[in-house]
Image (cartoon, rainbow, N blue to C red; front, top):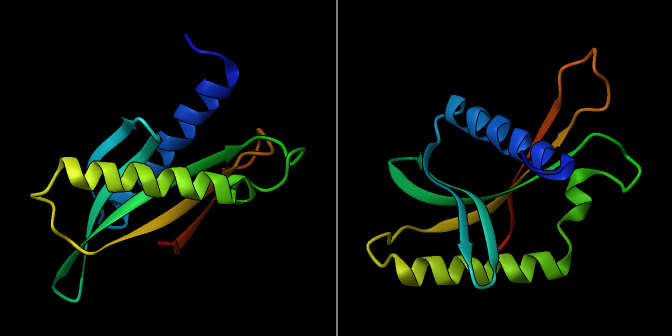
Length: 125
């Protein structure tokens, strides 16, 4: 079993994947590791009869001590994620879809309440 941070992270990613599937996203891959870092979730979503790849960064918090989860997607994190996406696309040339990056922020601050899930679409490219 991993440390507390890893357990919370996996729980958040599982919750985000279920949320995305419920919204009609097809999960293509999860936890893709590249030399530039990890891509949490890779999906395919159709809008107006056109398919889009959506790369999803998931941030989960159980306390606001370090700010809101989405605040953890810093400029450096964005740069690493974009490099990881470029590597993934280069390694998968058959996936010729337009793409975007989304962030899913999950907060579970109270044991008695369901987690708060916020989905930020097209946050950067």
